[in-house]
Length: 169
Ligand code: PNS
Image (tube, rainbow, N blue to C red; front, top):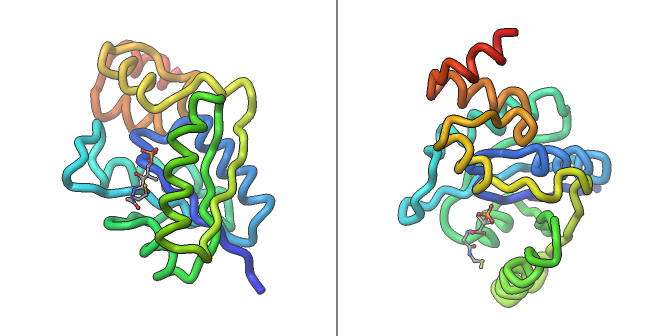
């Protein structure tokens, strides 16, 4: 029996913390599906297509990781894939309340689906997509926060000369 886990998120954009979690999960499960949440009513900094592209570029060397997108309820998506494990990251205590609520709501909706939590590398615990967005918005250097393919994508999109010089070197 193959063990598959779904790692859902907005990934707006994918960070080094997300990637660390994906790598850890890829060692535990036979297959990991990174599922990019698409919600037309939720405003994101990067479009769904952009978020997907950045995730795909960042995980392409990890053989047992697939990338997909989903709309609607996460548990419905998991059922459609016949997957019973949802993976989420816990960086700090402050993540707990939101994750706890989401995990219990999902359990009520689908009792057979379990949420499993992994902790990213401690040196990544301060990194969040919202911090990255703020730095991008103000033209700062995101090298220490995101995987190289994400930086490359963002540099190309914004064509910020300061980024480009560092990227080309
Ligand atoms: O990276 P994020 O923004 O914390 O990811 C949140 C996400 C996409 C996993 C969550 O919003 C989600 O599961 N959305 C789908 C809608 C859903 O199933 N909601 C019920 C659970 S509370």
